[in-house]
Image 1: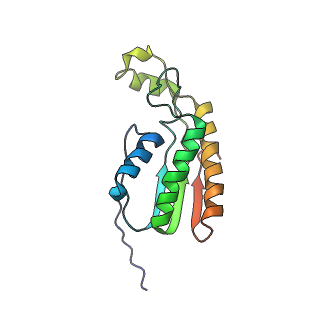
Image 2: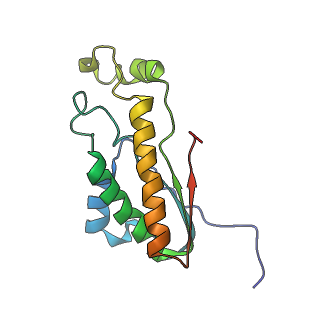
Length: 149
């Protein structure tokens, strides 16, 4: 088969979503993902890793995050011809984020609901999920992009 330098890119960028909300959407609407794809990328965790005390509606506990991510990534792998790339949540600039988010959430009182320490911890969970997926889907590639490495 001849390789062509083109592809259709389907972006499901969902600003502010966490894995809990994405999993629920996928369970209700199987068409949320295309029925087949060459490969996919998945970046989740930045919104799950917000500080629970400041943003309880968006925070997802680590054990639930891991299970949600496994579900989402496994569904992607079932549809992917080749595999997926998991992207660990990147670091943030808490001061810049506080300035931005406080224009929308004045109840944060000038503080950030994100820390790099917590983002890195959620990134470690993404690594664990990668290992689990490689064992479950040995015929597919599962790669990881981690800005902390």
